[in-house]
Structure formats: structure tokens, C-alpha cells
Image 1 (cartoon, one colour):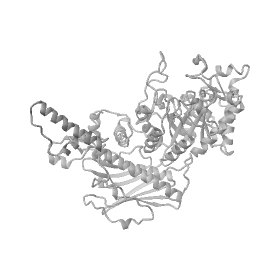
Image 2 (cartoon, rainbow, N blue to C red; image 1 turned 180 degrees about the vertical axis):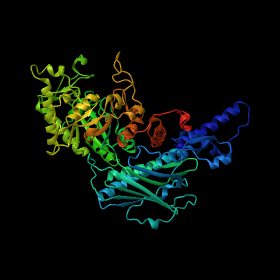
Image 3 (cartoon, one colour; image 1 turned 180 degrees about the horizontal axis):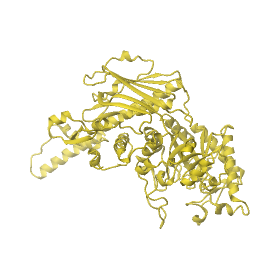
Image 4 (spheres, rainbow, N blue to C red; image 1 turned 90 degrees about the vertical axis):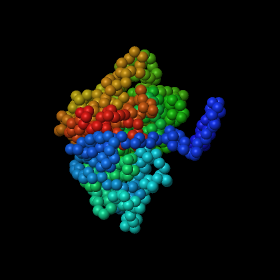
Length: 639
């Protein structure tokens, strides 16, 4: 970049000299060639410097009031919009805590080098993991500060790298900050985890936490208490949301007093991403996981294969990807999946992989005869597709070929090992087309074949899981689950269909996860990708629609059977370049619904959602805007 800037300067000078000579003028060189730096660098340094404040704010009756910056006295007395927003009215947290929230809104200034971590836990594995979590926490803060200042951490007086100290370092030995203007000279974060050493998230994990702060004479202590690593991680995420960098004063701020007791309403808070209809890179998946962690979403349902492509490179059966991937580059290896699972664990997220079966299994499954395994799948790419499957291309596993079940068993074994997820596994199981199987199994009761295949696949899953049946074996709601034949002690149902299906399943004792298409399908509303067709699930699901959907409202007697919910993003019309805007901030709306299940008027949620959406943007997530900039700068004027 430096060589580019130098060359650009030289070119500008030469052009200026040439122009001057052509017009008979004496050429004039800049007094200082570096005076061009500001304009050039502001365009090419990868970030945009904030414009000078035109507006300042005051908090009047819990509302930020905008005033023009024409009076220096008023400017000094007033606040930036961000500081006003964070200290005026209700606390700006997303998702909102569930049990107790008490804060004092006075802002305190500090710099990042005041932060340090003290761990109080007897579990060495928790200590090691939480140190990594704290480093992620600091990296996020530095990223947000860099976004607002465009300055290098090595050269800015208030952007020194934070001091990272652990439980073996005494806080008192660190002394005070060198910046006399700060309110907080030392900011220890004390983390207490004393009950559970488990680092494997499950549906039995206690994710509750408490966060309490004390401020006295320049010392600001944040005390986090949790029963598990995951609860402590959530507490640190909450604390981070109550820190903000004010670009006007170039200070970090937090609230002078925080007391929060919090726990999720639902255990399962998920997002589904389909990586078959469009390949999504590992970097894009990780970016999604990072955003999920801030919204306290804890399950990433990776719909890794479908009839369109099979991008997973199996250790035992690499032919699946060889014949099914879009290209050799657009694949996922076992190491990729392990990497994603490790990345997710540090962010409080469990990876749930799905190899959809028996339907949605076409490309990638057609090599069986060449290897002496027979037809592993039937109806592959058969036309007319509308007769044999729900969308092109067709393909449905062969339920009468034992080799098909053996392949599934080995796939399950690999994925269980890579993700370390053993309490919940998704078999797929929806949209089986009877016309496809009917060509091969005439005279048979096709529903019975489907039922038996599902039981056989679940048995193979148990073998793959070292002969331990996962606590929850999930399938999609379908014509099969409507018959209520699957053992309810063994199977959970992910409901994407209507309320009547949910009610019938709950009455029969099934555990369920809600993903209803009319509210939590995030791919809807973009028309049809088929020539002359109509959109399969119009209209668009706004963040308000996602937020206000509470499918359990009339199902209180069955609340214990409702594990939670999941928003789904199918990628017929989504590539990774649209991933952020399709997910965010709508997925955050789901996060609060499943964590807090609040009973709030949607109009009172806009301020908190707007602040959270802006925080995602500062963290590099290209979240959609939720309201005009004028409305954001003038709270209450657009109500």
C-alpha cells in the first residue's frame, strides 16, 4: 500500500507539472508532499473516518433529544448519539435478561489496557478455554475501536493493547492506568466457575449466569458467577454489550453499576444453514457463528448435503463428494468440520450436522454400481422432476439396499467424531416422494418402508455413536410424523409445518423444535427461481415477524416438551455474498425470542434492536438496516 501511495503522489505531481507547462504557468510543487496523505489514505485505508459531529444529544425524560452543534457550550454539555443511547432509558441489551436487570446509567470512561482477567475455577480445562474466550472478547473490542478511529493500535495513545492477566497474577501488582482523565484505572473481570467442568454443550447444560459490578476510587470490578463455562461465556458477552467506544471523545465507556441475573427460557436456540444448494465457505460460516454468539444463539444446524450437491469429503466414501460436489474446491473435509466445531465451542455453540435422508439424496449417490454396492439412491435426476420430487434434481435413497445404510452409518460416525455432538442428531426425513419408490417397490406399503428405513437409520446412528443412542434423534415433520408411529422416547420432531401438527405431536408426548415456515424461514419472499413459477413461501419474513412469533403461547401444558426453536436459511437464492443480510438482524430477533421470550410491544424493541444491529456492523457483519437513519438519530419521532 505504501508503494502504491508513493506512486500515486508522483503521478499527481507529474500531471500537475505537465498541465502547468501546457498552460504557460510556472509549475508549483507542494510545500510538503505529505500534505496529500490525508485525502489519499482516507480513501484507501480500508475504513471510513467518522464525519465531524453535526448533532449532539441530551437525555430528556428517557429520550435522546437531538440538537445542532452550533454552540460550543452546548456541545461540551451534551453527548454523542451512542453515549446518549446507551445511558438514556432502558438498558440496551440483546437479548434482554430474564430474571433481574438493575443498572445505573452514569457512563464511566476507561481504556482497554485497564482490562484484565482473573479466573477462579478448579478446572484446568475451563481455565484454558476461557482464556481463549477472553482473547476473542478483546479482539472484538479492538475491532470495534479500529472501526471508529481508523488508527493503528501501536500508535494511538488510547489504543494500547490490553493487558491480559490470568488468575496467577495479582491485580494489585498492576498499578494504575497512565491516563489521568479516565474514570476507571483498573478493570478486573473476575470469573467464578465452580460446579461443572464439562466443555461439551448439551441440552442439559446450565447456561445461567450472574454479573455484578462494583466501582470505587478508580477500580471497577466485574464479577461473573456461573455453573458452567457456557454460562460464564454468556456473561462476558453481556458485559461486552455494555461497553461502547465513543468516537467523539475517543474513550471506552461502561455503566457505573450493573446487576444482572440471567438464564435462557429455551435450551435449543438454533440457526440452520443449507450448504448444498449453494456452497458457503468456511470463513462465511465462521462469520455467522461469531454473530450467533453475540445473540446467544447456541445451535448451528449444518444442512451439509442435499440432492443438489454433496460437498462433504467422507473419509470412508470420498466418492460421494467426487461425484456430488460442484467442484474440488467447493468441499468440506473432516478437518474443516473439526475446525468449525472448535471455533463454535469457544462461542458457546454446538454444531449439528445433517445428511438428509432418505429424500433429498441425489447427486453424489450415483457411484454405487461402479463400486459393486448396487443402487444407493433411486430416481437420481429423473424427469419430469415435479412427479418424483419437490424440487430439481430428484434423488431418494434406496431403502432396500443394506449398503446404503452402511454408508450412512460411516457418515454418522465421522460427523459425530468431528463435532463431538452426541446428545442430539438430525436424520433429515422429510418430503419423501412415493412416486419415486413406487416405481421399484410395487405392491408394498410405501409408508411402512419409510417408517422402517427411519428406524434402521436410527439404529445405525446408535452403532456409530459407540452403541449409545443419542438422547434426541431429530427428524423433520412430515407425513410420517403425522402418523405418530415413531417411538416418542427416541425421536424428537423439528416442526416446519403448521400448528395442528405441533399440537398433535405434543399431545402424544413428543419433544419438538419449532421452525415454522410462516415465520422462521428466512429465505422466503424473493420470488421463484423456476421459470414461470411462483415463490414457494412468500412473503418476506421481517425481523418483526420473526420476533413476534411465539408458537408455544397456547401450549403451556406441554412447555417441557418444547426444546426451543430454529430459523432456517435454505440457499436456493442465497450465496455467501448475501449471507449476512439474509440472517441479520432477523436471526437476532429469534435469539431474543428464544432466550427471553419477552412480552413487549414491538415499538419498544426498536431502540435496542437498532443498537445491537449497529454493533454487529461494527464487528464486520453486514446486517440489514431496520429503519431510516433519520429515525435512528431522532428517537421517538417515527413512532
